[in-house]
Length: 365
Image (cartoon, rainbow, N blue to C red):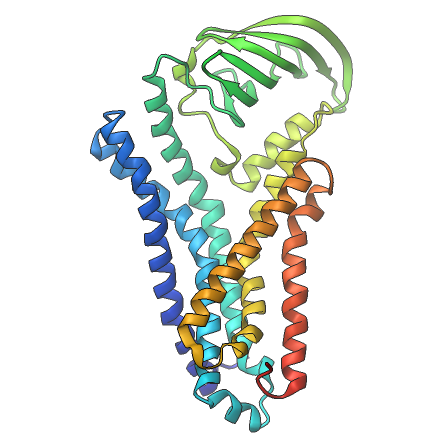
């Protein structure tokens, strides 16, 4: 598809509001983060150089949040400005359908979605991990060991650990999973409802040990009231290995899902996070599809309408995504359905509005 004069004109109207909103929204998010980081300097006595590194490490994840909202704002403002000044009416009066006017804005939404995905896969997991490593080092200076909630980590023997919930005050663990490599050919999976921890040993309670065979199925299952699991390196050794799902890309998370799934463990929460890493980058495309026809409602209100509509729609979109995510995590919906339901819903509404805009042949009210 060739980029015609009209396309360049529409894209030019989009680019500067998009860049300006992304920059401004990122600054707002950074401002909120600064309050937390200032507390580390004043209360935890963390050196300012470390806090500055934390701020830089956090920037990519904040930009990823800003990109879809910036796309939404740019599309609404670009087409809204053309509608406000009557240019859109003239162009459509010349026989150009609305979809043809907005098509390169949708292409821009695809491009921003691609950029968001690349950042989320190759940059954000690493920067999140570096940020969390500093946080864990700060926590380790406290009297309680630094075992985090909902975190994966490995020890020097490549055993994989996952802990769903931690009570550091009472040294309690809730829902523990350990994928343990053995001297034999096949691994062992240990799950426990709870337990207590110290720096060198975890005392697990209500334990199930599963021996996994060559075909990936459980060959033997043993239940026990308690089990003492030694932690040879101690807590500090895990700083560089602990990872939440936000610190992994899709390939890394898929590997952990595969390990735990082989023993029949419920991996729904991990599957939801895995699919979410692909679904969320599509926000820019879905929101631009919805924003294009909605921009015709702005009339003479210009950027005020654009700002309000962008924030309102973004809030609604992320709220629905969080709701569907919760439904998937709790087993109400299959993980794949739960994660993509929000995108499908917004996409269908946007498509219907597009059809209505073209059918009307003029800005609808």
